[in-house]
Length: 316
Image 1 (tube, helix red, strand yellow):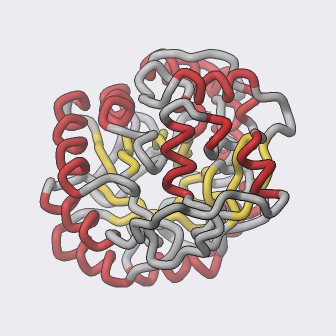
Image 2 (tube, helix red, strand yellow):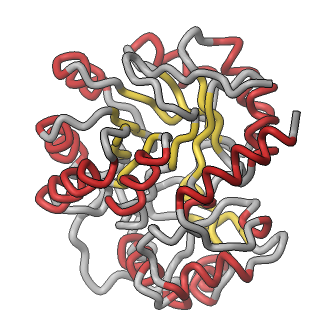
């Protein structure tokens, strides 16, 4: 079984592998640029960045990418959603990924600037809406994914349903950590895969070593579903902060920068994610996919690609 060709409007990556755009500076230019250079689509997680920072990250990624494809992921729930999108457009980003809500304006902006839009969806209804609105492709994300979730259904259930429902390419996401998982998704009709958790354990990912060590030490069953102030459930690794959330004892924010359009203010999600990224893992949230326990090494991005492709070939 050959790797499928993934065509997102005029964009055709060498390999149908997208690195998930993880927010709050987990997916920065170093990672996105390396993935693009390796032949995939490298994605900067724009949510949580200032407009100037996003501009600089896109420019840095371009230098590293060696003419590879660079995208951004921008959560609709972010208060600066429109400004971040416009910044990415001005920097002539190759593709924009968006989830955690739906913006009709985004598709209009994409059409005006000739930049393809990819919607992250978790249901047939949302996939059809995205297609009608002008999405060039959809990411079908299952409950196995790390971070904020839009469904309690498995990626293995939703991918074939969405493939049947739309004519645009479907990219599978959620719990995909190796080439065998990729092969399973292609057999279900996916034209490509999006992987985030696997790329956290890369040399180029800029999170702290303590963050990466939590991934490496994870055992099966160590991820749990938590409540997020965003208004969506999220999948994270067990730790003292997550225990406080589950007990209803999470610390109320001392201050608020109004980073979200809507926020329950049960705790500060931005502070929790920054704490984890910077190594204060017991005081923060370490988002991770359900199958994080299957990854046992930290490798350069190029080596990750070589391993994924070898595993995919062996899975035929």
